Amino acid sequence: MSAFILFAAMLGGFTLSAQSSVNGALSRKTGTYETAFMTFATGSMILFLIILFFGDGNIFAIFDVPKWQLAAVWFGVGYLFLTVLAVPKIGVIATNVSTVIGQLTMGMIIDHFGWFGGIEIHLDWKRILAIVLMLLALRFIYVGNKKGQEQSA
Image (cartoon, rainbow, N blue to C red):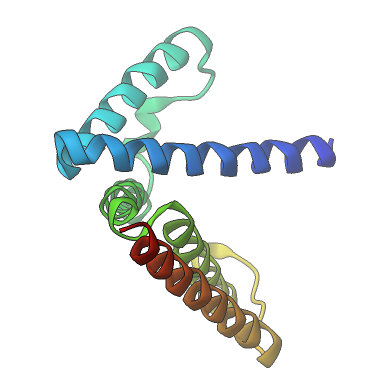
C-alpha cells in the first residue's frame, strides 16, 4: 500500500507540473486572474459532482470547525495564483523548485513549533543545510534558464 501512495503522490507532482505549464500558457492569452478563476470554477464543478454521487462526508461540518481552519482555502488560491503568475516569467522548473523550497521551509517551521497539532521536530543544521543547497540548486536553474533564453533570442 505504501508503494501505491508514493506513486500516487508522484503522479500528483506530475499533474502539478503539467497544470503549471498549461495554466502559464493559458494566462498569456486570458490573464492571470481569469486563468486562476477558470481552474477553480472547473475544479469546483467536478468536485461537486463527485461529492454528489460519491461523497460520504458532511460538507455542512464547515460551519462547526474552528474558523482558522477555513483559511486553508486562501492558501490554495494563493498557490495557484502565484504559480500562474510565475510560470510565464521564470519557467515551470524554476517555479516548481521554488514551490518545493517554500513548502519544505514552511514545513520545517511548522514542525519546529508543532503548529496545527503536529509533532515537534526541531530545526537543526542538517535541515538548514538542505534548504541552503536547494536554494543553490534554484540559483543554478534560474541562471541556466536565463542563459537559455539569451541564446535562443
